[in-house]
Length: 139
Image 1 (cartoon, rainbow, N blue to C red):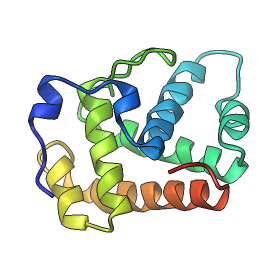
Image 2: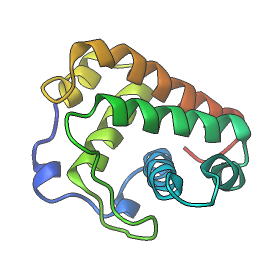
Image 3: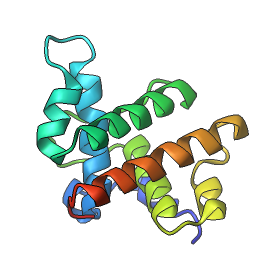
């Protein structure tokens, strides 16, 4: 599955993505929005995902992406239907994880992220996917 450069030129509407990609983007947005506020992202995401494990997995993905991204990870507001190129890249990485395709994962993030981050992010996204599956959240 080759990386689709056109998706960065005209990012899709959030609702054009798969349910699990939407959940990932919502999770990242909520983690960032709660970072400096009084709300607890884990609590809000637990309600949204129906699982504490899925909420913590989303926080782990968001933290790993934030640590690995070469510049601040760009997001839209939590209520916005538009997506950023960074969010689209993360969604493509997640799709590769769902398909078990490490090569496509590397294609999606290879030039953007140092190789040393690939395994950690891949594994974190796999845990997120598994946690949502266990919580019976639509994927």
